[in-house]
Length: 133
Image 1: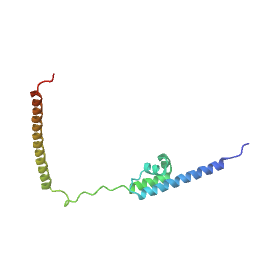
Image 2: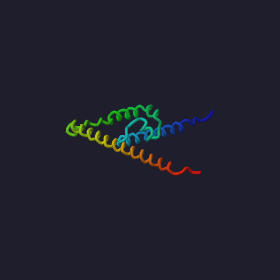
Image 3: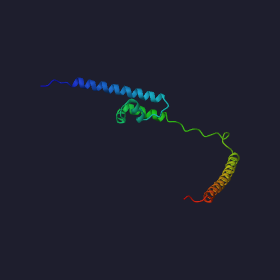
Image 4: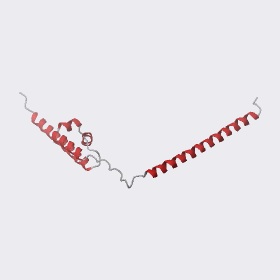
């Protein structure tokens, strides 16, 4: 009959499990203190464990879920009415933008005409010389 060698194997598995739990708890605490979003994926990555392992550990799963709900970022508050742009201000900005667009269109048209004249002059200058033989 063979001797029972399972005790050292079970002890090693328990030690490995406790070490993994300690890494997961440490990662969870570090993420809780940080600015990063708390999620199963973030904890798993930081601890070097799989997400499925975290889900299987009921106490860790409950703690991650609880922290995730309490650390959700509140939406940014709306801008106070005193700091918002008035309708008159917005209309003026729109009017100035339209004026700028009209000026750019005029500049663009002027440049197109100048380019057309320059290309025409260049083409005409090429014709006035005798053809190469």
